[in-house]
Length: 230
Image (cartoon, rainbow, N blue to C red; front, side, top):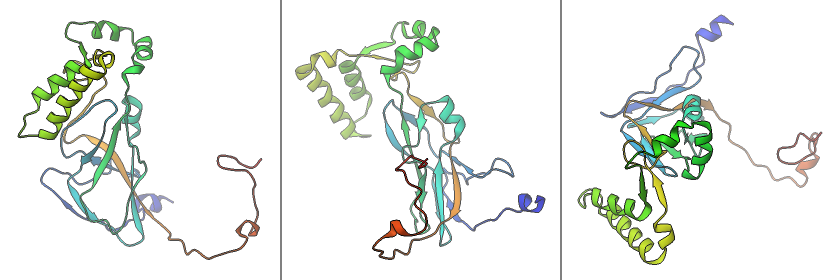
């Protein structure tokens, strides 16, 4: 049994790591998953879903899949979620590997959050911590340089004008800001942060055989989805 623990089954993974990436790392000899390292800084606004590059390409053995799973610590401490977890990387996938990340924080949750953290109310009451939605969009359109992202700038300007002209009540909606003047609940990650984990598994392919009465094969436990049939 000790030999099994010391010599787990392995699979060969061919990998090319770019200049900004890091090879996935196993934290301990008993770790089932290897840590995936962010290849660039990431600012993830509340409600936003983005691809986070890892800057490596890999080739798996036939019949092997890689699964991308959340890190339990990040799931506990933050509102970071992997919306497609477990994400599957097929053995014939040869493009750069990324992680799909989502910030599930909503400012509608602020009252409940303040109940748990009363000191948050004093922070949000500080000068410069509140801004109208339309003003925030105007501010963002001024921050984005046209040469960097002209589409983002145009969308922000159009959205602000639409709010002011057609949806004045929504235009006046108050956004609370964090210490970096981004919407409260924004998540910040740095290149080099451990962002998720990857587990390798051998998988079976189905050989589908037409059958008139598959329900008659073996024993029917009864019950539907989520039911034990008892």
